[in-house]
Image 1 (cartoon, helix red, strand yellow):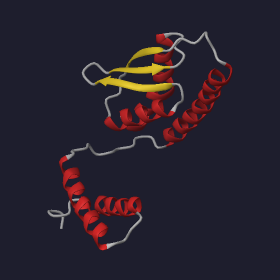
Image 2 (spheres, rainbow, N blue to C red):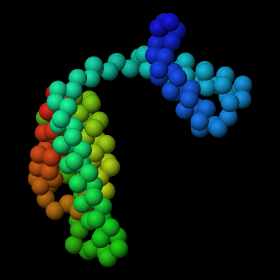
Image 3 (cartoon, rainbow, N blue to C red):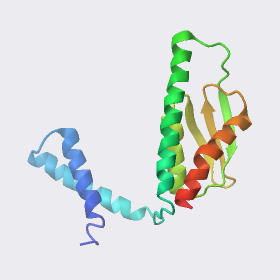
Image 4 (cartoon, helix red, strand yellow):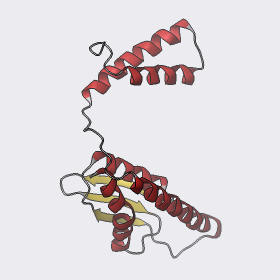
Length: 161
């Protein structure tokens, strides 16, 4: 079964997603969905992901707390900029050297940074670990590096590495 259907759960999820998006259980959509599900499972077989190992699960709770607090704080700041206008802000790019190499940790950090209003993940160079983010209010490049490294990277290193 694994030769023709390498990941049955992924195939079922892809089929269900296809049917939900099309809002139809017609034979044509079922056939197309099965074809896409099989093709998707075969493509996923080519992706070699390292095994996921969570070292300290309780650090996830602390990370979620920090992210929620930062997202709320950032929403308030961005709302003030939009509603009242702020000419003192200086948008720009922050360059942050990261120690983290785990693809799962980097993916979580990308989601956190992109989900926080006023910041956006721009690029990451795996060779030297340099992360570039765009910030709506860039007061100091080193300040953002300290924020990312102390609040997020430290906890992500505890969780994934």
